[in-house]
Length: 167
Image 1 (cartoon, rainbow, N blue to C red):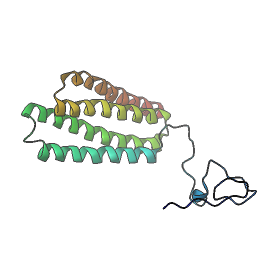
Image 2 (cartoon, helix red, strand yellow):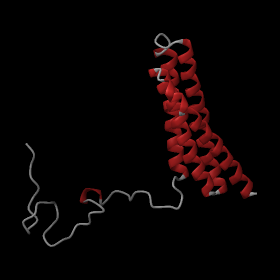
Image 3 (cartoon, one colour):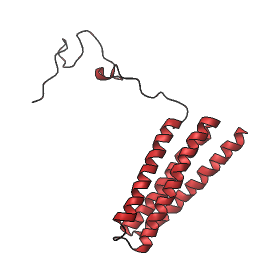
Image 4 (tube, rainbow, N blue to C red):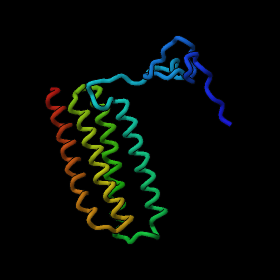
């Protein structure tokens, strides 16, 4: 049985005391918790980028193990090679995201933050389309892969430009 919230004194249910107004921005249970991240001009902070990179790498290791052990008997050698290519590019560019996070704290360039987003989109398009191609055999997914590769190229060019501008 779910208990109802106590009356506030004005006929509404809630946990506020009569006469007090609650802010919708911060629920009462969260008042003593530290505030969340503040808005910055950069779409992704170095800390966020390290977290995203670590998750990309975590998934890459899992996908590699799954391909080597779980898909070895299920996929054809050609599709297993496609899976391996997806894992390889995901791992390299996950490390690239970590490198961008380190460079971001050194150079402080907003271009690096944008490069990280472009690289992440590249990972999703490139490796994601290859994973789906290997699992489903749907050939048209191979047409998406070059868009991810283009994202990688653009992201690395952005890193080079940011480093050049810093000098």
